[in-house]
Every structure is written in structure tokens, then in C-alpha cells.
Length: 486
Image 1 (cartoon, rainbow, N blue to C red):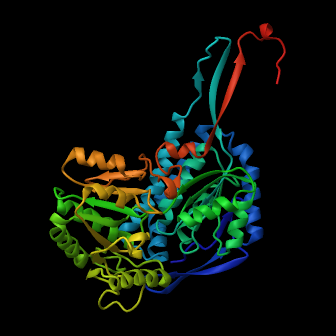
Image 2 (image 1 turned 120 degrees about the horizontal axis):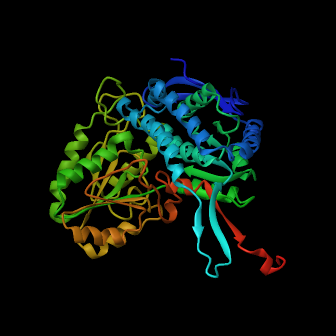
Image 3 (image 1 turned 135 degrees about the horizontal axis):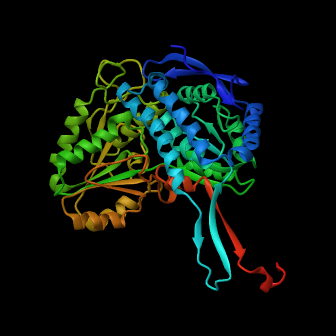
């Protein structure tokens, strides 16, 4: 297949000032050589978005909906292309590519409808002398930095609300996975989307990325990435007052109490942890298990780890693909080895799957007796590693679960005791608490607390990140008030 390789700037597909080879982490073979942006390309994108803002922000909701639905229709017509791009650029198992594609389609549908719910709101004047209304308006040019773990899902979470709100958006996909984003640019060009409304450019240069953020043109900077990257963007973007919306890292705790449905808990922990090779921001990281059920739960997790199928075969039911590159594999292997050296027990995995000598595959791994001093406990692993931490004192459990610098995104609770579940849900400092299950969808708010982010992806709350509110006040009888004073 000839994969899309061009950026999309100022309404046209274009080559860049540099190129980058994209390597499939499952096969370690060349996929495509894609265009990447230099300073001139970044400048063109910024200026195009700036020029587009006055007209795009004033288009009617009906017109914006029409463009969004045209793009959605092209996404649907090109499902195989979009999924194939992801399948090869990150080695994601074929069945798991559907979520990326589907979220892009659903985001365009959802926000085309949801924007209608935002309308003027009247305010009561206590003295009865004026009328007041709050009006929603587009915030300005948006700049989006995307992580590589869900190339189209992450793009979907930004392009949907930005287009609906009337904000031109510049999208910088990860340099590891730009091909699927470039395919979206190709679809934007195909439908004749007005110039500057969407721009998609990848860059391998940190200096070019910083130039985008440091520009005074963007009014909104949004990110899906690490906490450190979020802090860097905020420092770099301090050249002007900007809005920030960031879904950042997490070190998700799982609380498995003695009355939990252990099969359910094991299914969800391993299902989320081994899917996408554990490269998921909400993936369970520290699994706190009551000592009463420790052996039984651990056995169930190990069984599922050993049964998980690893690979890249499009025609097989693959649960775990490769991690993104060799550097990630080496980092994860180091976390495992250091934990074992410090006293953790390796119960499954720990290295390459048997018989797989190529590709950046890490066998689904289970570590027991993990303690608070270990790096695998303190860090967001972002890999297929389950770390089991026994607990016997429920009073200290909240303190342990909350004691994490990069926590704050998602936490999981498994118990049949509703009062206990609500008690711990209230005490956990995380933006999302999942009790006896897990659910994500485009209409459900997704966001963290503290170092795990600001703002929200998904739901109507995401639109608030791209809209500003303006108060319009009118005197009922201005003659009795004389001249306006300031």
C-alpha cells in the first residue's frame, strides 16, 4: 500500500523541509518516508490558521456541521485505509485499530450535534434596569499536540470540538505515528475544506514544536501526553495568555478488596493492561490486593497473562502488540529487572515472548510483592506490566493510592460493598473512578486532577476548552442614566 506521506497546510497537501522514515515496531521494517515540518512550514500553518479564524469563527453552525459530516463520510468510506495506517505505523493489532477509527467517526458526529446545545443564556438584572446575556464565541486558533498510542482517537478528541466550536486547529501528530493523521489531511483536502481550518504537520524538531507553542497566534494549546511535556508546553507558551487543555500521565491504582468479584477484576486489569501493549494512559498500574484474596487473584492474573496472544498477524486474535520502539522496550525491561533485583517476584513474562526474535514485543508480565520504593511502582509504566501490591490495612490504602506524583487520571475499585466503594471513590484524588467495571465513550468526560491534566476530552465539557463567553448588557432606558462613565 502507498501510505499518505504529505502534510496538510493551508488547504493543500504538501511536502516539508525534511523527511522521516516510519518503522513498524512489530516487524522493524520500513513503512513510509513522510514529510516533516521545518520553521517555514510551521510559520505557514500558523499564518493560515490566523487568516482563517475571522471567517471560520463566523460561519453558521449549520455550515460547520455540513463540513464535519462531509469529513465523517470520507472517514467512513476510508475505514480500511485509516486502520491500515495505524496497523503498520505502530504495529497495533488489527481488531484494536477499530477503536481509533470509530472514535474519529463518532467525534465528528457527536460534536456536530452537541454544539447546538450551546446558546445564549439570559441573566437576571437585580435592579431591573438592564438586560444581560452570555454569548459563546470561538476562543481562537487551537494548537494540538498528540501522543502516538491512539493516533486517530487522540486526533478525534481534538478535531471534533475545535471544528464545531469554530476554531481553526493546527494538529501536530507524534513523529512516531504521523501516517494516519496525514490520511485525515488527505481527506480534508479531498472534500475541499476551507483553507486553514485544519492543518496537520509532523515535526521531528523540538525547536520547531517550541516555535508553534511560543507563537502568539494560538489561543488554545491542547495536549495528550506526559506531565513533563505539559509543563514544558506551558513554559514555552508563556509568550502570551493562552488556554490549556491537557490529558497527561497517570499511575492508576486498582483497589481489589476481599469481597471483590475476582474474575471480573482480573479480566478488567489484564484486558486494559495487555491491550495496546499497556500503552494506555488509564491503564492499571499499581494493583493493590487484599491479602485475604492475594493468592487467588494473583493466580487468575497470571493465567490471563500466559494466555494472552502476542503478535502482529492481521488474521489472528491478537491481544498484545509491540511497544512503540526499542527505547521503550529497554526502559520497560529495566523496570522489570530492577524490581526483581529489589525483591519483587516475576510470575509471568519479563522479556521477549518465546520464539519472537524480532519486533519490539514484551511478553505480558506479572510482578508480585511490589513495594512503594520500586520504580515500577512510582512511574507510569506504559507497558504490559501488572504490578501487584498486597495490603492488609485499609486505613492506609487511600494514602498509598493517592501518594503518586503522576497520579490523578483514573482509579479502579472492585468490591461488592457499595458503601465501601463510595467511601474510597470520595477519597481518591483522580479524575475518573471506575467501580466494578470500566466505561469510556465520546459523551463521557475524560480528564485528570492535579499533575494529570486540566480541561477535558470528550463530552460537552471539551467544547468549553474551545469557547469563550462574552457578556452583552443593554440598558432598558438609557436616557435616565446619563452618559456612560468608565
